[in-house]
Image (tube, rainbow, N blue to C red):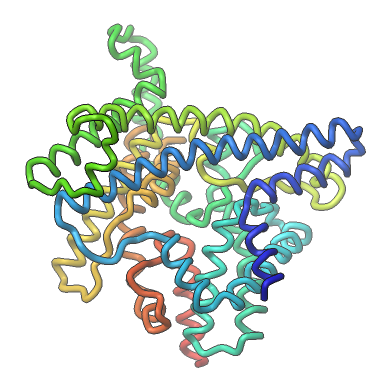
Length: 430
C-alpha cells in the first residue's frame, strides 16, 4: 500500500508528468543530451511557474468565497472537489489508486488505437474522476476487481475522448490544433461553445463597428488584460468586504486576511494580487506550452500518431483573459440561481457554488463561449453551465453520502453526466 501511495502521489504531481512526457518526446526525436536536459527542465519549470500563478489566484478566490458565505450567512454543502477527494481517498484509497493508475495506462492505449488522440496530462483531475468512478461502482456493490477494471477503462477512455468535445473551440481560440483541454468539464465547455455560436453574427457586427470607432482614451486601458482583470476583481472584493462590514460579520478569520491593511484598502490590494497571479500564470503557460508541444512531436511521430497533450484549463486563459472574468461572474451567478431553486423546492441538500470551481471551470466556459459568441456567448454559456455545476451534484450525492462522502461534492459536468449514466445502468443490473 505504501508503494501504491508513493506512485499515486508522484503521478498526481502534474509537473512530474509534464517532465516525463517532455523527456520521452525529446529522446524519441534523438535530441542531444543538452537539448533533452534543457527541454525537460524548462517544461517542469514552466509548469511550476504556471502553478505559482494558479495557486495565487486560487488563494484569493478561496478568500472571496469564504467572505461571500460569511457576509450573506449561507450554509450548505460546498461544491468543492478537493474536500470530496480527500474523503474518498481516506476511505477507499486502494480502489481509487488502482483505478487512477489503470486509467492513466488505458488513456495511452485509447489514444494509440482509436480516433481520440488526447493524452491527458492533468494528474489531479484524473485523480478526481478516478474517485467518482470508484465511488459509483462501490455504491453499486461491485466487487473490487470490477470496480478497478471497469473504472480504469472508462477513465482512460474519457481522458482520450472527452477533450474532443471542446476541441473546435480550442482550435478557434489558439489558431492551431496542438493542445487540448485536460480538465473534466469538457462537456460543459462544449455546451458553452455551442451557445456562443448563437451570437456569431452579432459578435462579428460588433467587432466591425468597434474597429471603425476610435475608443476614448480611458477605455483603451481595457485592452490591457491585467488592468481589466484587476479592476473586475477589485470591484468584487469591495462588494464582499462592504457586505461583511455592513452585516457586522467581520470574524477573526476574515480580518486575518487583511494583514497590515485596513479593511477599505485590503480589497484593492487583493484584486491587484489576483491580477499579478494571472500575469505569472500566463508567463508559465507560454513557457511550458512551447516546450511540451515541441517535445510532443516525437511522441506523435513515433508512439501515438496525431497525439495532442491535454493540459489544464488555465492554459487557454491567455487567449481571452477578459472572457475568463465574464465566465467567472456568469458561472457564480448561475450557481446562486441553482442554490435558490434548491431552497425553493425544499431540497434536503443545498449546494453552495464554490468560487474556485466557478473561476476555473466557469472561466473556461467563458473562454469557449467567447470563441464565436463574444461577451454574450461567454456570459450566457457560463451562466447555464454554472447552474449545472451547482445543481448537477444532486444526482450522485445521495449514493456518495451513504458511503460517507458527505459535506462535499464533485461538481464538474463530466463527473456527474458520466457517473450518472454508469450508476443508472448499473442500478438496473444490480
